[in-house]
Amino acid sequence: MMMIRSAIARRLSSSSSSYAWLSTAATTTSTTSFELVDQSLHGNDQKRRSSSLPVGLPSYMRAAVFWEPNKPLSIEEFHIPRPKSGEILIKTKACGVCHSDLHVLKGELPFASPCVVGHEITGEVVEHGPATDKKITARLPIGSNVVGAFIMPCGSCFFCSKGHDDLCEDFFAYNRAKGTLYDGETRLFLRSSGKPVYMYSMGGLAEYCVVPANGLTILPKSLPYTESAILGCAVFTAYGAMAHAAEVRPGDSVAIIGTGGVGSSCLQIARAFGASDIIAVDIQDDKLQKAKIFGATHVINAAKEDAVEKILEITGGKGVDVAVEALGKPQTFLQCTQSVRDGGKAVFIGLTIAGAIGEVDINRLVRRKIKIIGSYGGRARQDLPKIVRLAESGIFDLTSAVSRKYKFEESDTAFQDLNQGKIVGRAVVEIM
Image (cartoon, rainbow, N blue to C red; front, side):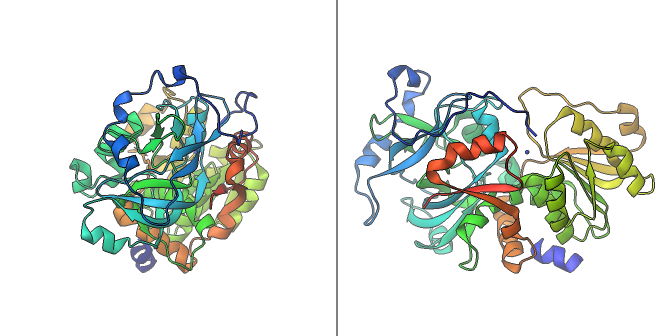
């Protein structure tokens, strides 16, 4: 199992019913909609957009825009985004539908708006930014298939220099804090007005997107675009949690609380790493039945029985070596810490409403050496190629992991369905 490991080594409550069908027509936006937009984002990109495009590229594209919380996404026309040095222009093929985006759409996670959401993508390399290093252009040649990680490391900050791409300073300081890439500027400008629009990661719900090269790896021709999109977040997040935070070893007992797209990916990674007892916890029987396909040896419906008591029963009263919370709920936060054995690890990967607080039994934490650790995602440069090999070898089952597919024009409908709990596993939007 160690050889295998070495080789391969988000429940939200229902929201406002104001969500509506996606408007597929480009809308006319009032000037006031952009009063909060930093006009300095125009920068030199005004000149770059007027420069000649590579042969074969259209002059404009479509993307799904988030304007304000609990309002539908709309499809708008944009100038083709222009990559800068160290960046790659991707013709997007597919983009995953993730709870992180939904948190933004519902206003639960503050983010700059208007913006293009979507952060787990596959696509084709169509252009390298000017003065991009030859090693990058050789690694990611024009025409190659690629998959993108939602954490796009700069490669040179304090954390990236130590291999901790998941803590990249520029990613959090610029993209997550400001909605831009690492020069402080967006690459997205509306065709009608030239106004800038922010980017959630690469802004993947678009026909083209710009991605820093460090966030990309080659996707083998043997892997499909659609199903492989989830490698960049659902699987990427799960891998980071199990490999780096939990450090799962062969024979470990593992409990996964919440078996949506990321949680179910955790089940598959735990199985690949040789975990013995793999316990899936959820409140939906259909998700729990599917969890067995992904490697769960035991399933618990927390709506019908006490999850912590059941986990203790399964493990002979000891608790699991590793418990992973993939929902982002105060209740399940506490359950996660109560489910681990003495000296065990409670790993948290589920995002929630900004400011939410989780509780923990302090005395048990101290006396029994309980380890609590958060994990946002994997490390793109070292982990994404390994994740691709997991899928290519068949150890990670992509086909079963993707349960719904939507057309690009159905992007808003996809998020409505996610919000209403209609998606078991992961959904993907097919773009081109």
